[in-house]
Amino acid sequence: MTKLSYLHGNHSELKLGLVGAGIQASLTPAMHEREAAEHGLTCRYQLIDLDALGLEADALPEILDEAESAGLAGLNITHPCKQSILPLLTDLSADARMIGAVNTVVFCDGRRLGHNTDWLGFRESFLHGMGGVSLERVVQLGAGGGGAATAYALMKMGAEHLDLVDLDHRRCQTLVDRYSAIFGPGRISAATDIEASLAAADGLVHATPSGMKSHPGLPLPGALLRGSLWVAEIVYFPLETELLRAARAAGCRRLDGSGMAIHQAIEAFRLFTGLDADPTRMRRHFLAQLRT
Ligand code: NAD
Image 1 (cartoon, rainbow, N blue to C red):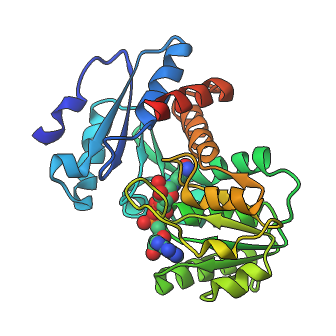
Image 2: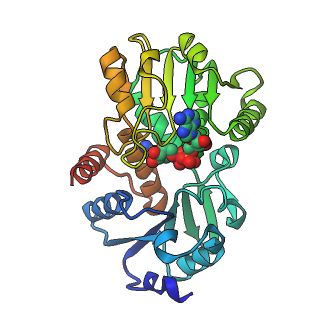
């Protein structure tokens, strides 16, 4: 495919890529390239932006073939390809299979191994930033790609009950059914009355695009927040979303979206290279880029 011919190049460098739509502002390439340099590796991390290339998700088979033959060690996968990539992979990690979404593909001896590092990213970030909070009753807004990973992490961390809310009711119910089959019935439900769900909750996880620079605003009435509620955000651009600002005003304990983004990249870096990234350095690089 000529459109992707720029993938070919120097074979001695570590070559990685990100496949998705509208990813020109992604911080992922610089995070991997800078961390690789700290380990003495030359890394070229390329954006394979469907929008910029005038392609749709149906170009994925060709993109994977091209990336593999160009000698890429692996790919990160983002919206809208995290699910459509599944049938094109040789094997899936147990977690990726259960979540039903892949954000990291490793090419190895002619095989394509799919992983999901988003859930680990959220878990790590949550354990560091929210240690000790109650997971008895949690409400999560958003059941898309990011929300599937955070809900999985919450269930794995022992959430006793999760109310899942999404404007797309079918999507929400599909995820509830999927996780009820894995974690047992009654631990996760689809909910529509946010006010009632929040009134009984210990914490709120936000996994919709609301609050991003491109989708400003609050995902729920700010008056529903109260000081006894913890609030975990996964949007990280901006770092303090309108939801986190409202949560600060209400006196809530808060977690921003940076930790999930950093820790998913740390795990992807380990899968690509076998090396442990330095979390403090990755965080410094991430925050520096966010400010530019
Ligand atoms: P997505 O499009 O796959 O899913 C978003 C879901 O939110 C959709 O199902 C949509 O119906 C629902 N939704 C939208 N507005 C809503 C509202 N007001 N109330 C209830 N549901 C609503 O998107 P995604 O890939 O899950 O990403 C969501 C956000 O999370 C984006 O801002 C993305 O950048 C961020 N994200 C961050 C990380 C991280 O590492 N921090 C990882 C993944 C995604």
